[in-house]
Length: 253
Image 1 (tube, rainbow, N blue to C red):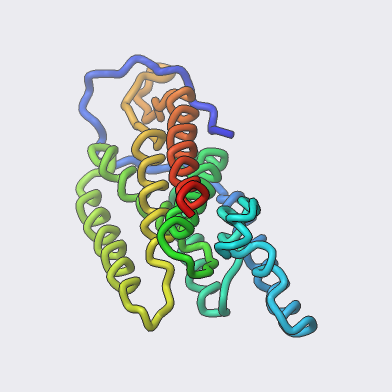
Image 2: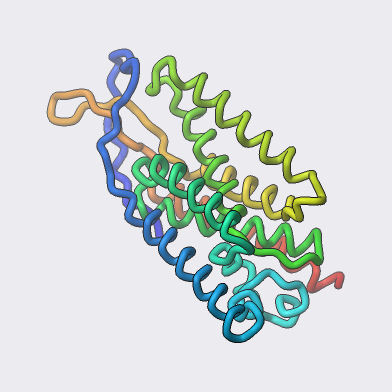
């Protein structure tokens, strides 16, 4: 599912504006994702309280042997599960901040593709490189962070002087979180973060919004000129690429 993009209009030769102000868009997909994640955590807590074990993690978590037995949905579903209230709160906050910005730029359909393809890529790399069980939305969050960086880099001429500061801050946050992931005491799925970063970043590079200054009703406007076929092709390339990576443990054990 991809966001409909307009036909490529004729660019104009006038200089780009110093900065672009985006129309406020209610991030409905972001709020829905946050709601589903919160409900899943509540069900996890309730199942532990009344059943004595985490029922959702048992059937939806990234656990090596069930995936090898064919339960491939576990390469997506861990994105909805969390191990603690702090874990949940940190990821929901990150999803809110990044989703608030990216969903308005990407459109909700393309944003959802970005979210789930990053989650898939993160869980695939984790599945291939570590037998440890894992869960959490961090796979997708790292993909969103990569997408934000790539969007600003590719469209910085329309963002004015603030683009350099934004890029510096985002790259610093990214590197800091990657560094924290090296600490074994925190039990962080480092490979999941890297996989989400790669998958989300690659999709964003190939399918993210590509702004251009164009004429629209005799007025200059900023338009996203990324063709729909490019978005579909990018989705296919990233998804199939990580599918090929995912089959490695099935072939070589």
